[in-house]
Image (tube, rainbow, N blue to C red; front, side, top):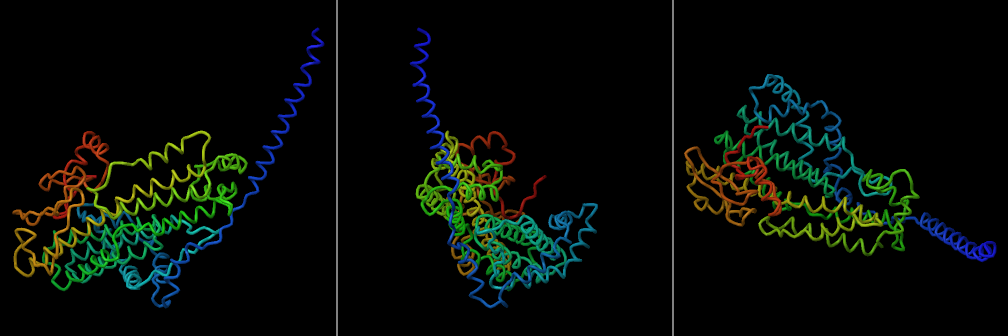
Length: 472
């Protein structure tokens, strides 16, 4: 009886085994086919940015001069430059820092020559078929150069050298424009930080050396700031849009399916650790669950469009809704994992979150324009205005808004001089009481919890004049 039952089960087991073998062969064939997918990048998305250089004479390119500057800028000590920039004459290394800064005058003159060129002459040629190749050492040198120009502007003010102050501030503004090219997010953020440094230096000079800059020099600085406003102070997202399109052509086939090889290569190059780095087979398994290209491209376009819109929108009009980010993050955590969504979850929220930097730089530029108008009014009338409305319209055509609450930028004339500020992070008027993190932005729910947790950092105003100092 038992033998008969075994005989009856054998055909079933054989059938099941055959099904397993067939399924295994089918899966292997499918996996082999997936592994055979190849991306076919055919569009040079960086071409429009290089065209700027091709359309101009090499004599107008800044990059050949910057190459000479960056080859030597490592001689500069960021630590010593910071002592000079902060005016920390109580430091035991003050004399050393001043001597160090002065010793690099030749390098700053060479950099100034570069900043006077109309175009960068973009050097960052694409390698390996990708649009850009990040170079951390290059970015470090760029930041060091900005610190050097800023430190010498501070030293020039102490020396009473008005021409040098203006030259350095204008050089910082032009350097920012050059370093923001091509306009992908990382370069744009470097541009914003350099421009913010120039604005901060100007405000310090106007507050601490109110008689240093005459009308002619004030107009020169005004024109430099206004030119940045005219070009657009914020992040354009033009480069980011093209960079994401480049991502799609590096990762997807012409048929719109994910290429494991392309996905593996892109993730390991630009986002190490996000996906398995040691096996294209694992990546191929993940590729089985990836969204198609059209779906991902639609999502990317909507995300970048929204980021670009927010970058142009005053902060007080920003919605608290972040449902697209929340949805993206939820999708990235689903099982089975969609590798394209995982990569987008790494890229896109950063793109969105940095939109606030556009608004904070715009606010800083607005404040700088007002501060220059205040100084020009004082130079012409012999006294600070009691209100901003007293300033001649040729100097200040309109009073900028406070981007945190939509009201006019705050100004009071105190016994100590002009007080110019934004209500900042907490969105309420603290009568010019400064806080170190008032220039930050957050959604209302996060803002409330942050104010409860660290009021000493966030509860107060973003003060432009006089520039406050904070303990580190």
